[in-house]
Image (cartoon, rainbow, N blue to C red; front, side):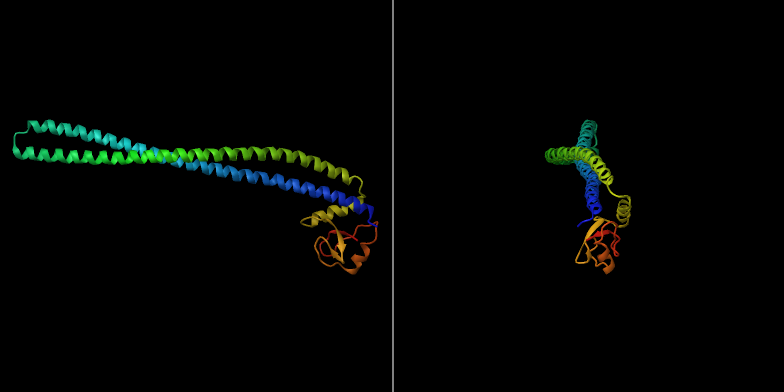
Length: 234
């Protein structure tokens, strides 16, 4: 017949394990939250990089436009000056200068058209990507809110579970309770109280000595695995 104190300790152990599970879930949530926040930061960085690329193209177009206007102003001056030139060689030199400036303006206007097309493509790509990213960020923020709500619920459950542990400990004899706490501090993971099966501890799965196997059948005193220090019973 199972020792009544062991029966009570098994209840304590079940509730302790529930506390451990709740605490692990609580500890996991900040990690999950940081992971989602990192994804949001990355998404926002991608959007910002695309925005800056678009702005750079706009700045380039403006710079080209300003250069075109500067060249056009220079061209107008050259044409005015050409009307005042009397010598043929100077006139020909100015004509060459005018033609060169016209070609430069044409090249700049061609490049400006290319940049404008690039801006249109970049803007369309940016708008599409931003819409998708905004949707993902919205969903990720919902996940964070859900995690925060779950964390609050888990904390409430943890408080209730801890109270249940304290309540279950009240009926356990002092010597059994002290032995249980000692075993709990010595082993890395539950169970802290384990049955013997075929003379093997169900906690470490190693064979115990004949003395331990025999004593574990006797009620009234705590007994321990001589391999892992867990409390054992048979």
